Length: 213
Picture 1 (cartoon, rainbow, N blue to C red):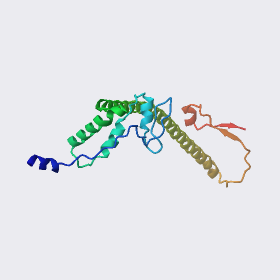
Picture 2: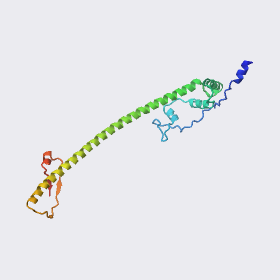
Picture 3: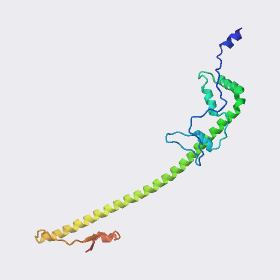
Picture 4: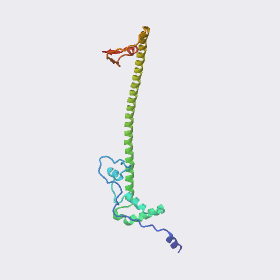
């Protein structure tokens, strides 16, 4: 009598709906592609497309459908009770849909390994891209440094030219001061002053400029 009371007090496992046909997955349609799928603009991955690209063998009842079946069970149910419930359900209906523990575990294993390989392949692709881009950035930085050095050199030359011209102008001004001559407005012919960058430092230090009439 005591055994009957204990048996009656045990929670009965709720029935689990197990469809005879795979339930459609809420994912984008699978299409044949020459390149592996990539992250969408929304930041999601099309897992069925990845499995299709990797040629993962299909099963009549998938690991994802097993997850849907487990979600029907109460969260408070103990793990062992959940396992027994699923085993009983598969034993009763699994033959009709070609599903059993081994086929479901095999499907989950294939997909898990495929996703790991996909992530590793994408990681290598990303590492190659980063390495190539960093090399390009380094080359651009070198070019920028060279241009900055050329700018600094040009500024130094301009400063040297300004100093030499001011010094010589002061010398000429001393001549005017000596004779007490006031500066007069003179019409200076238009000339082209060409500074040849190929001139040696000696020419620059002497303050000589080429004057082309």
